[in-house]
Image (cartoon, rainbow, N blue to C red):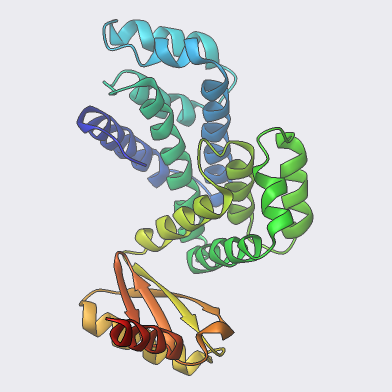
Length: 275
């Protein structure tokens, strides 16, 4: 998500209000409901261009935009959701699209805070990553979930048939929303973004590791400790097995790639011989 300066300030103000309300939340179920309400508003605004333009129109008075919002949602969403959304619409956004991006970001933050409070943030991050790998490895499934002509409810039902009862409720809610409202993202790219958000919530960077063979827990712990020492910050591992590497590891952290695989070394040798 890329926001211009005004939108970044607006989102920061809304996040502050959200976290104030989150601190007073009674239980994780309330946070789950708040996140789902915010996602429902994303769906509403995505489907009504005139409404999102009106709510993001910086040439009108903030009180007028607040009145429009309250007239539309009062009694239909919780008081907490309404308070967050009032902060959103009374702020100045760079564009209507970025206002909707902001509400979506707030919904995701709410659900990740819920997972964090439940001690399930690690689990949610891992489930999002693994589901992304499963879908990336199944071409027919990826096509079905990304077909622009496909029924969103049917796509959600397809995902639910795969994950219902097998993943954390926060994971399921995040994935359902991504499938229902991809908003220009691919399903695989969107899941990777969500996993990265969960890692960032834990103040860790993500190392995407491809290994020729499966790494056991001790090997993963040693690799994580080594990368944490090298980069001077906590590193979260996302590991997948890729036999085509023939041996070794391929590690990607941000824009940096550490290629210690046999296939990588052979490719480098071929390049050197051809030059």
